[in-house]
Length: 141
Image (cartoon, rainbow, N blue to C red; front, top):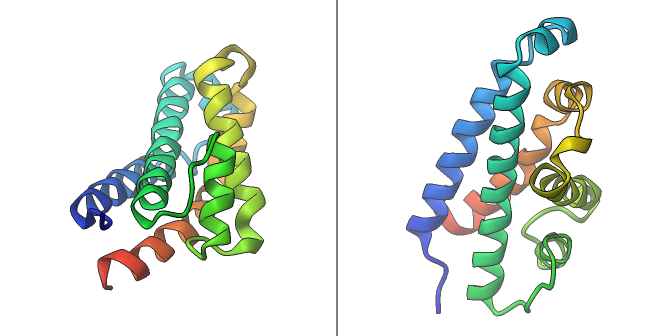
């Protein structure tokens, strides 16, 4: 089986849209972010789904390329890094994303507004190496 480039394009489009939405929150102070209860809720969901899209792409590519059968999201990003889909030196950021996804889904009451705000301020560019690697390899641009 080959990698479904249309699926790849759709997931990348979704990720880019989610990241643009999150970037709109970058200029907001922590106090304003916390005062408006919609901001943290929207940020949590948008961040979760951006990470989900990234992990879905990892799973699709790993499966189609025959790189193995990851038993967890963390293992999926490790396999992706091992096979050059993401730079090895960025692996800790992607492992952190996998852990955050699990916390947002299963331990949502343990993710506070300050943590979400800080991630939006400091870590959205962490997605860039993955997006660039996927585009370079599967989208021909």
